[in-house]
Image (cartoon, rainbow, N blue to C red; front, side, top):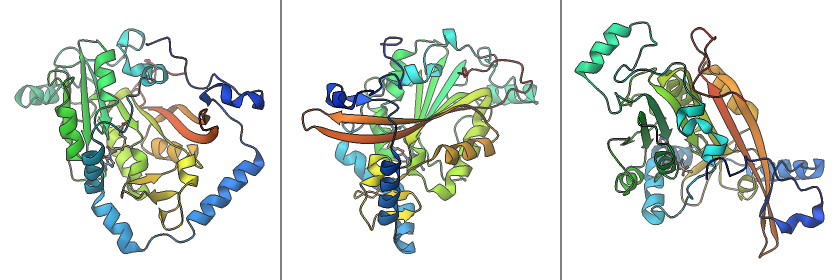
Length: 337
Ligand SMILES: C[S@@+](CC[C@H](N)C(=O)[O-])C[C@H]1O[C@@H](n2cnc3c(N)ncnc32)[C@H](O)[C@@H]1O
């Protein structure tokens, strides 16, 4: 599969009469009218945000709503995301993305200033994946639709994959999957928006952090703290990969009045929440966390239901931000475009 699937952005609709000839078209240009109709829809559906006590309830019970979601859908809802490897080669075997900061077996933190001290601590108090040479963590992993394709696709013997979610139901489903292997993977319950909860790995230990449609589920007021904490877990040269909902995505325009919590932040009928990002929103979050931009693109896709002759305008944002090398001279684990 790897190498065969074209990257997003290659199929253009030049002749509108051909719209129903394919399932999806990339980089669709929006007309000014379409943009202002979308703007108007959002103004309408967000005219009166939900009262504060309702907002607090959705915040405080956020993991319960996702638990309910996974109790109902188990692992049938999200599809495995095989496009991950064409969009994010950092998740594949490292032959082409060798990191300049990789460590030798068991020596996890050659990069921070107090090397000897930390190596001693590792021997005394090892953490899951301590002996790995390439560590990926997926945050908000759900039932593993990203994690399992990584474990299947990436045959690097030094790979270790962490995955966490604040829904214990989701994490249980990951652990009970026949592809789950404790020697290569560690799934744990963790609320990334909770500043007090600690991670199972030390700072400066991760090569890649993956955020696939998860930051949008977090209260925008807490997003900066989440990204800054995650950034501290990255090795220099390590990166955060994100794909998430963009402003005016069809899903945003479909919200009715009474579902808006804050600007561009809504609650679905099942109690789960979703924010719709601009490229600038994300750039600010990552840059403020000390990361550097490698990619920040908007993917405006026209999806087509050929059977029902329906068109759906999707907007997604894809980002890759890298933690600077101490020297800035070496090439990091994350490839630049
Ligand atoms: C839309 S789903 C995406 C799941 C998965 N990333 C995928 O690609 O299939 C969002 C996930 O984020 C999780 N989530 C939301 N807020 C979270 C938080 N504060 N900490 C950890 N996980 C969270 C939810 O439980 C849910 O599994």
